[in-house]
Image (cartoon, rainbow, N blue to C red; front, side, top):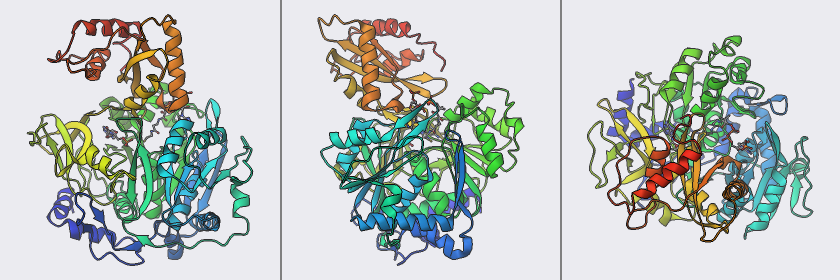
Length: 632
Ligand code: COA
Ligand code: AMP
């Protein structure tokens, strides 16, 4: 069957399409139908089924005789360790951890926050929660205590599972003090914490609140899988929106199982037993869908890599990994390849390794620039597939489905919509744009299984953020166009989200931090083009009248504040003091215009601008930082 056959078969009978895909899942009680639209525009999939995620990701493979197959490869150049875990071992470990959590009162529907680096125990913690029907929320290690506190207050977890430390190439990340700080800041307090002690830094446990990962499990009865309803959330994952309050994306159990399993063969072209590596982090959606759930549900071997594409120890690490583990599919962000290309432009290190097991390279998370794609293709000699999706959707909206058929690659396009996604480009009035014209990228409702069902405890915000601008459609927040062949091109965000090294960040959240500086009267943060990270945040600061402080000092302090409050992942290092900000007559800050000036792009003078002369001041301020003209 061709892509067109499959896409059309979905379009003509979505119910039959998803019920057939659902046959690959082991249900405790099968769903009677796929879509439940009684509460539209809140849609639910496989709602009347009963099923368990962990059973499908672990136990069923052991029962099917795959117990000795490696489930997880852990490769950690930052600790110089490697080890593997079979499906059978994984089952024992997860059942034990789940048993210990249950013994301390964690059950179906309870939330558990997980704050861990790239160790297999992070996946085990996720799976142990899923085994009990508890809802996990993983928080990325690069976030600071305040961000963790915000998530604790929103998710109100019964327990937090953390590691004592994480390891970045240049430093140890002290997770435990961050965790303690976050619990202190948060209004909600968890009943208890479980700490996975790493030998690189053993944390001091808080008596009566913290348990050691191993001691906690001593003598417990292993837990069996608890069947849950199809629409029961398997996890909440917070992602950046327009404000400092992150959005808690809710992922229902059954849709996650059915959709991810379908993508492993059809999008990624791998079969059970194949080694599949998503070089990302468990804290991001790629880590949820393609380090943990997708590969394990499908019976693949997944890779937990604790290192970087460069510097651990060099730009040949990815190729060493491919050779050593016979990796068939690699998925990463274009940034990683830009970093490798910068260190090894001629691909000398690529030729030192046997990468013949690799069949396809997948890129997502940010725009894949044609230079990077071409370089990767030339070096590896395999198709390089850009695909486009977001935390909210959990899996690819658009891709080149190599497992079905490889369509012609068009540089700069993540190719075509996947079954389940009816993509429309709309103008501001909601009218369909002709091929080639830029508009808001929207998806006709309902979204397919595996996508978000709502925002955690914020149904109104869900409706307002995604479903209100274009009634009947989900607003992706991306702008772009379709060409004559139906290929999509993703051009820019329509909101204040920026993408730094494949990490989704909110400029609004950074502005909220900057505004807290006692000398800052007003501020704006924009994303500027960056040759390595795609974008970097840059702040404009207007100081209070009469502020005599040295500007460089204020800049230093604001940079430190963002790092302290949001975390190092914000990569906020550029800021400049200006007298005024350009605004419309109604007072809206012209961030887009400033970003265009910084990037040296042509722009149309906004008709509603209050005082065009301010743009010259902005230009002069940017020049002091070397913009435009920075690589990018
Ligand atoms: N825990 C704690 N700190 C972290 C972290 C983590 N898990 N991940 C990143 N950080 C820190 C970094 O150490 C860095 O700190 P610094 O300012 O002291 O140098 C900061 O956050 C910014 O990180 P990053 O933007 O990733 O830059 P980098 O210079 O460390 O690395 C790349 C650059 C390109 C090598 C890196 O971004 C990368 O590997 N990207 C791959 C993309 C990816 O995995 N995307 C995920 C979505 S698919
Ligand atoms: P996240 O939720 O962190 O996965 O970020 C999702 C956002 O990243 C999307 O809405 C896009 O803005 C951007 N993005 C992800 N993949 C791509 C891609 N292949 N091409 C262009 N932008 C992308």
